[in-house]
Length: 69
Image (cartoon, rainbow, N blue to C red; front, side, top):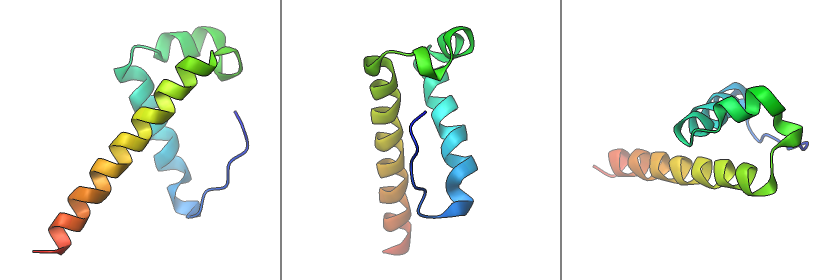
């Protein structure tokens, strides 16, 4: 996995859980176990990352909606 800077150190584990959750939803968790992250295709990893971003945006929008009430 590429080195990435996590802005909030407490979020690192949550991001890893989200990554595996999304991979499982996409049916890629078995592939990760068999081949490892380093042997996943760019397309597969991009699909996981893209879906992670969608979930994070959805979560942020829900939080903002709660705060605006």
